[in-house]
Length: 434
Image: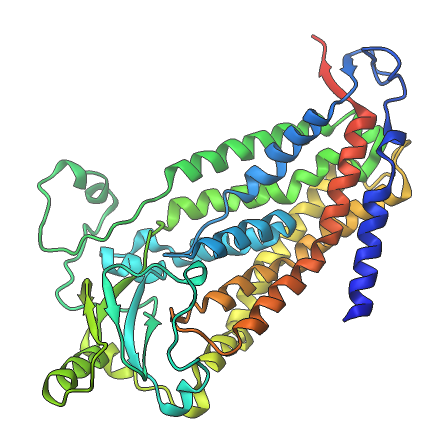
């Protein structure tokens, strides 16, 4: 581990230590210059121009990353940081939101179930319970927000409701598109359950604006910038972030965001209430704020977890099913193909007349790591424990170290940011005449 850390720190030091002073415009002695193109006029770039480019083309794109229902504050920060260094991690979340097709569910409860915003009480077998620190709650920074209030005794936990769940007494929404569109102009039905959510129109508009801004940046890359820097041109590094914003735009439109997780009644909860009243299982149990009741068929299929199927093994084992592996590989392959197609289509993979070896290496390594290391965004969910909520796993320290170790792969992105700043200083800020 020390060896890898040393190599990482050395690579980072080499990137940061590259002298920015050597990357001044060729005509920096004059206030304005043309980069050998009479149709443009340029001025030397300032550090504020670099900051604006970073904010508009990288950080703002990462901020459009979709949040999970009731996600903890620290997990939101980790998710945005992961999307900044590995844009494919943001693409993963966008594709997952699109895959749910939550907006097309028949009822609000089914919409919430598809979006992963519902949880239920389940009973844990003693063998399964050993993976948790005696039911201890996580610290507030890692705690998922749950609507209402609850306190569960030892041996019980909150589990994610299946996305295809059905609920008793759940009124069906309008069946056709016209009825859905005109629903707001008719008398509201009080029979159905109303769950607080939003389609995050602000994020959708931000994603749309960022997409247009990125397209403009890519368009402006054509010409002198490509002739000078080739496929390493700083404008081309925006491609994976632009694709992430496009996917997040559709994800925001298809799947609503929920400020918290919502509780639904299960058979385990009813049994727990009965035991609490009749047998007296002890203090430390209450639960308010239930928004629905699972149908009997699904309820019976949710049996107590046994020792050989612990919560930790279930949460990890999901990733080894063929279906989930394919779902994980598909966004990676699509994002990689789109990014490479944009870079190759615009630059023809020419090296350019002024690009240096380290600029080409850093930008291409950044692109490659951004594609194949994007899955580290799911490490955040391992710390949050999105399968079983607000119960501390014994491996919490290990999960945290996994995340921090994963960010070592961000070195190519940091090196890429550095060489982008160098190229901006060398190229200047240009405006096309006429």
